Structures are given as structure tokens and as C-alpha cells.
Image (cartoon, rainbow over all chains, first blue to last red; front, side, top):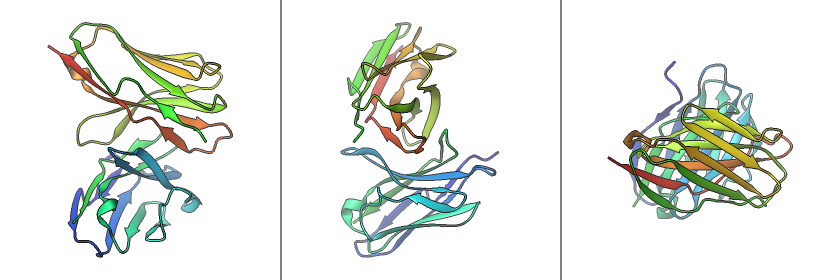
Length: 109
Length: 113
């Protein structure tokens, strides 16, 4: 089992550009969570899915953020347009006991 | 709104010492309390999960306790080793099985050889 896979691992982009983060959960896990981690705010839940359906997106900071889960093996988190304050490490995790991926480190210049 | 606090933010101990990490939460109506470990540049790894009906959980040299009435959980690490150096985070799930975890900011532990 390869665990939760995230890509890219690092992303550097310029303000205003679209950013797409990808996550492949562990096969058979029904839940998928997207988190953001910063030094100031710690780890925050952005959105989570159950059986590919978004259950709670109250943590999504603004309309610039959107997430989809078109099937059980793939999810995306999109930021459009990106801003410097979006710089953080973004994690996805699957299942209720939260198996975390390695994260995507995003830097918006 | 549930808030989770971990004090201290950083802790340095000599190898072999027994130590306790603290976690406090504001809403005692929690569904479960989970402890995670995070190594630099890595994701989180779940260490122990204590359900609301339980008082403690043990795994090897780790023991986590939960006192809902006082809004506290502790993670006890026995005979610490340099390999235990990492950031430890606790997270509370609010009652009702919402699956939403509220995380503390973590305690960065350094175990010196």
C-alpha cells in the first residue's frame, strides 16, 4: 500500500496564477480530508468528503478555493487566483482515523 | 467553538527521561481525542486514539489519557529516545461523529543523546 499520494510535493507560483493540488487516497477509504498548515494558524480543516460527496466546506477560506472528488481515487484542491497569503503546506488525509499524505508545500510569490 | 491548546510549544529533554505532553480543550463534549506525530517535512502519523468512553490508551512506550471533565489529555512517553524527536499534535473530534478534527498547534519535542 503506497499510502496517501499527493502531487506536486512543492509548488512555487506567482500571485494571480491558478494552482491545482492533487490527492489519491488509500483504496477503500470512504473519507477524504483537505487541511492547510501554517505556523500562525496551525492545522486547519478546509473541506472533507464522504463517498466522493462534499460534507462540510465551512473551512474553505474564500471563493477562490474549490475542491472536487470526481471518483473514489482522486481529489483536487484548486486555488484561483492564488495570493501570497495562500502560502502553506496542504495535506490530504483519508479515512476516519486520518492517514495523512506527505503534503504539498505551496509558495505564492 | 472547540479550541485546542498545547503547552509548551517546545520541549527539550535528555535521552532516557520520562516526559508528559499536555493538551487542553475548551468543549468537554468531545467524541474522541487523537494524538499525532509529525516529523519535519512530513505528514502526520496517528499514534493513539481515545474514544470518549475511554480513559486511556497505550502503545509501546506511549500512554495517552483523557479527562473530559477537566478538558485535558496527556501523552506520556517513557524512556525517551532521540528517535522520538518530532512535533506532537493532539486533535479533538466534537461529539456527534462529525469527523471534524480541531488540532492544537503542537509541542516540538527534542530528545538529546
